[in-house]
Image (cartoon, rainbow, N blue to C red; front, side):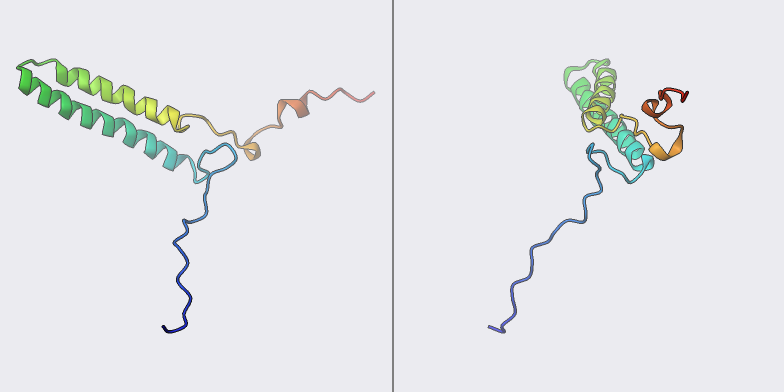
Length: 105
């Protein structure tokens, strides 16, 4: 035994999610995630539909698989909170509560 203490377990990098659970890394990463969910769903379910078409000798299941994959991609993006718009307080007029102040007399 060399007297060294065991290494600390790996800790993940700082979580960059805000209080709402949405990533604060910018809209590009959220858009890329939505795109990958939708395109990935379309590709996977189209391939499943193609396989079922070849198995059953039909020609319409591949199209149904593509639509199912797109709907599934939208659903995943929605459930992961990627379709919500983040309101940036530094980019616009004051909130409605501030603009609804009574005029001074």
